[in-house]
Image 1 (cartoon, rainbow, N blue to C red):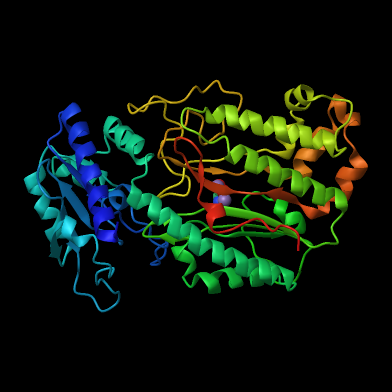
Image 2: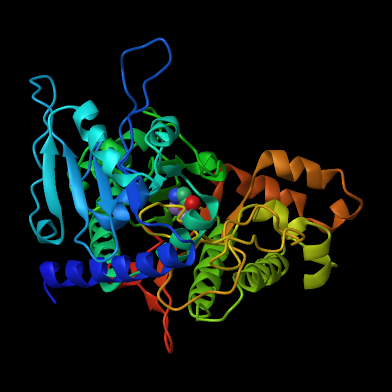
Length: 440
Ligand code: GLY
Ligand code: MN
Ligand code: MN
């Protein structure tokens, strides 16, 4: 199917689902805002603008102040903000494939645009302009509505899957360029620049800030800096790309051949268990259970590598040792947002997943559904702060501190792929475009 046909199907699905939800909640229609810019305190500078995902789910147009109005049975209407302005460019985003789906009307001021909402009294409203929407007689950000729409957003249409595929393809070639920069002895900033050069976009176009950590900085889970002065023996790069608003989220860990053999074995072990976990991604499978499986596999790896001795898998988990080496969740939903919605909902009504779970910080903790896209990103890190806590525990003597201290300068390992959930065999979107040649 071409772009036009894919988008047509996608929009048809949006309207059909929305019709059912509006009918259930006795709402006459829906208005969605593309958002307003965030201006820094005591400044006249705005943060890079991100279109609200609710708006993007319907319409690929980007930028602030647009409104989308939907009345069941009618073509959705795009009220496009197009001021006469020589400071900024307000022309259309350029792509035409989606425009047929909307009645598009342009307004040269926000006031004129909002005046149109007098027609939509009683409609639901989604967006940050709550007070303004209330003044107009709209019902802003109704929880039951947002929960139902988020629940639907978890399921990806073929259009969305194609976009995530393109975002993965773009990120994959940028990852290869970054790997080459690492092979050439580049610093964190040079590796980042190689990535950006290949991707050919601005940083504000990324789905999240690139994480580029050499050596010990690989142990900082969301490491935000880019050092200029050092090359390294290990690179952890967590970086994605955007395509038509949709994100990819990919992590690779590479090492030069001089790193200790024990570290290389850990890397091989992590690659093996990450692929095993990816292959378990099927409809109906509990993601909480998969997270537990990750802990079991990582515990086995800690034992097999000699980092832990005299304890079995259960002990390693219940003592919190595996959690000190793997302190984050196995993954999260992926879509318009890198940490996409619906992972913590139990149902369309928005009931939360069991909060008594042993892993309260997971971003996804329910059974997986066909047509969702999820990340699988186990990690094994040497984080001094968490290791110091382990040192004080009663079973500290079961840990091989000599080995831990020798490996700590290499930071850690994370391998992250994006997987589409379907019956039969899971579709590993990332591996279609990027293998894992982790030894340099
Ligand atoms: N890139 C952030 C994450 O993997 O969740
Ligand atoms: Mn990531
Ligand atoms: Mn991720």
